[in-house]
Length: 440
Image (tube, rainbow, N blue to C red; front, side, top):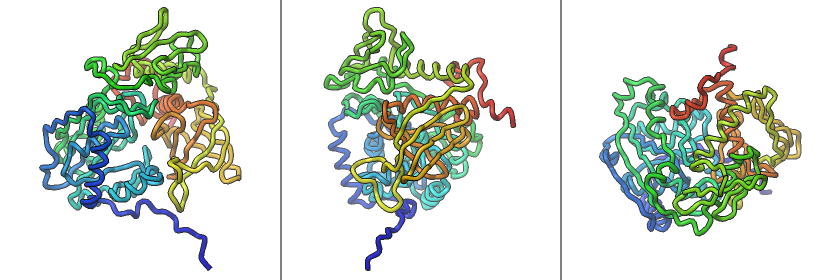
């Protein structure tokens, strides 16, 4: 009799390293059809292809298409990507990542197995591309890199190169999955020698990388003024990012209509053209850019959580998990296995509901995590608890960006291991940070 028991998937046991030549050729053809007609400029200042031994190429992470541009810039060098663990469970991506022999890494949490695979590959002479922010830009700006990156680079001790990408977020924003052709750049330069890493502290390395990564795609666009072809959908789902009205202050009343974005309560609004420029209605209050809008929303949350010690954000959600023995079907990010209430307050993130038709709870305090993540858009977000992946799908509203801001600012208030970028320090002037650490 045939057993119904399937072998549990172990993504870490897949072979990692340089992909076969035929796989690289197929990937190159896919890339040519995907970005071949896009306007792009590649500038190699220091060439990692000339490194005889191992090296790491770090990149700022702007969109889901970054890897095509990086591959174009590094061709024909053999290298390996470090890729989010959960992506290995998605139909399509799973096969590609297996063939390309990518290294899995659980986002924004310690992952010893991933580190061992990375270390082994580099010590054998391999070259690896890493996005140390851990996920793509959500608002056109970069996030701080994952804490511990500097320590990892010092321990590994190989040359570090920096692939700076520009324009890719505007080609594929987090609010709309449309592809918008414009102008894209890749510039590669050497960042650290092993001696440089040895002479710097982990904190100095992280500070320097964060400063190098600091950018705002919308402000860059203001300066460059490139045309982006949006086909009349430039504001599509922009309310997922710009969810709070700057005039009346109400949340979830902004609504997009092709090239318009306006508040259904006070009619505060604006149009946007294909240069990503806002054109506010008469007597409207509109930030200069969507990224400035997100800064306004972050500052409002910073104030709210400090003014209310009983602050709670409550959302009805469906719970998604990764299967143990097969790949997720139908292009999903996980399989729905429960539903319940998600509560975010000063003690952490709490899920109270079901999983597999049984009562199930999740409790995370701010020492265990510092942000929530989403792969494609703001319709969902995910976390890890004890190494296990969980998706949350809000039932009523696409609140992923709001939740991300809230979690990050709760973390900074209570723990502050995930520190803000230097350019954002003005938001916290005169405010306490890491208050829980002071009680230890």
